[in-house]
Length: 321
Picture 1 (cartoon, one colour):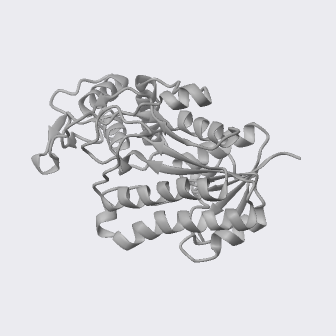
Picture 2 (spheres, rainbow, N blue to C red):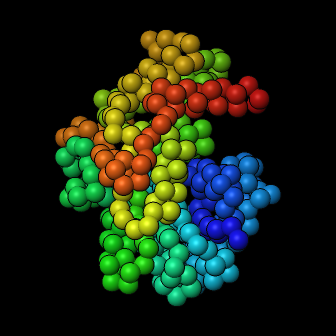
């Protein structure tokens, strides 16, 4: 019998790529979709006829236990959660519930219905906060500075606590920025790639940004989901920073995107002082040494190749429209 995997957030960027990877490896894939939403997204086009879908609202108590009991998975990937950090300030209770409480409920469901399942939880480098030394690894002190980061840290600590107490195979993936053509347009990488594509086709005049000196560790989402797969397959559970280990500035992102479109950024980029944040003490860069050593994983897609993929995808979408 093939192994069976359950993915929460299967309709998102990471969930859809992970589903494709698992199906290609012969794994039976089950995914969770929200009632009345998610099902129509084109991100699921590659798996729609091959995966089994379970509908439910993860914010409702009992939903996860019902789905885990129905799927009887060997592997679980918990990717569903609010993802846009600024929104967590306005949606405080929803963010904490959707991240920390749902994590606790999934651990309860695993303990009751699938105690042998290898379960991977997606957390975020936001648990470290803006002043963490660079590069950041699994032992970096955590001082989150947003409700999103606080909720992710609570979930991360619950995973570690229950792993030790109950002996469950629970792992926490500390994800740094990872992108793809499937990334939501609210994120800066898609904001840049979509704007550059529109400018190159004469449909937009300029790209407006804030602080272009900010540094981020950007990886390809396809590389990150490959690491999640290795975490689930590992004999022992653990926590892993998943990052490229290389930082690039927003200015480099912009320059690379314009170069991919074959145009110059001069006169097409405007910095809006209202969007400029306070400078960061240290570059936001991850140290993936543990993932290299224990999982044999490395990010394979270069920064330049990733940006090119995104610009080309946005150009193609605009031409079709």
